[in-house]
Length: 326
Image (tube, rainbow, N blue to C red):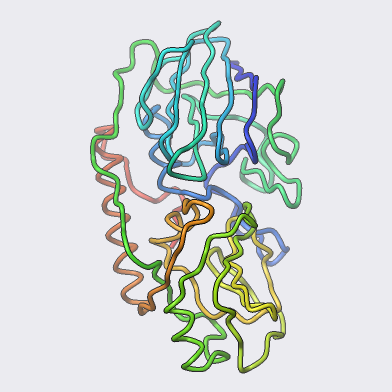
């Protein structure tokens, strides 16, 4: 079996697949990638199914070695990627040979990066998924962040990495501009018209208080006329909670499954990775859309992703049947 050796590890580096589903009632959120599009494309670049486990890292990558020839691809944001000191492109497949060192530097325009390897990472699944849930210590490698000296088993690739043609993402990535789109949250009525105007006017600063569980936004305080304490109810990735401090909290991949703060809005799925990848210190605004509009935007994004994946593998198997987020 092929082994990947972690020589250096950046912050919050973990094993992720598309996440575990069906356990919310037990208090276990799905986990999975912070940027699902970047993860799916990374897998297709190296010939893997879109749900294969890979490495997610925050801000900066690390150094890696393998013991047999292995295809790899780095996505998520722009970074200096080298093999034995020679620069290679992101969003493209390359071959790493035994004895060579892969180095991934700091991301310059994103927070979350992805390293996919042919065959995928084959740690033991927990509750049907290899995704690491750091908060609860599930999945991945012993439920924890990766560290120097870790050895990760890789599966058998579908194609010989040495002879497999290089795959390069040539379609331009969708770069939505403008406000982050939201739909009304379950407790939208707790907030009066003036507060909604303030919420949509913003702006909010993406603070350094962020991880795989949540992101805290700094800006005009948001006050709930209906009160800031509710009977705990369910949350999803993208829920925007408003505690008594008035500082909105956007729940992310490793969120708690229930919460006792009112939720003014929910990030439209199409903009989840845009918010997750927003640089710390950047300013954002929100735009209110209907559920139908949010679904239309998501459908358009899914079609783009299908086209992008089909352009990489040419076999027509680019759909989202492997567990897309809606």
